[in-house]
Image 1: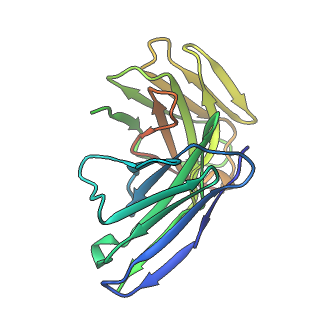
Image 2 (image 1 turned 120 degrees about the vertical axis):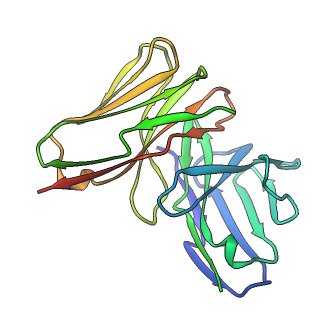
Length: 112
Length: 111
């Protein structure tokens, strides 16, 4: 299947700082990528749709100014968690479609 | 909004047993997907279903896309310890790749 790579795998940051997570499609181009959030023992919840060359589309209840998404190329989307707080601690996962949707390895964010 | 109801929530079985889990929805989906997620990892695609009534196998896994487009099941035959993990169904009603996920089924296999 297609390969989606996410970086970093885990990050610990201080409250109030910003964290950037990268999502790359390694062997295909993706005009659209998706960002999900997963809390422990829960399912994946879609946060936003990342569109290459245009603004991201956010799901209801997701703050666009807090979760900044940039999709500057056909193989890279970034999610920046701005002014992170402990409640932002979660597992963030991206996906891109090559026929079916393929997921990155996920990023464990811990805000202390 | 659209929701997927996945059951059972968890299963604890003996190695060698067969397993079945399913997802239902009140909405129609064009695509059904089944994923497995290990702790600390992203979901890995197991089977993708694109046509109503489609029955697809991948090794010991078999999944079917319901005729009504509102349900799907996943069967695992002759389970082994490495089948342990969380299985998610996911549905898409568009061609964008946007997915709605079920709540997940946690599978534990006793050697």
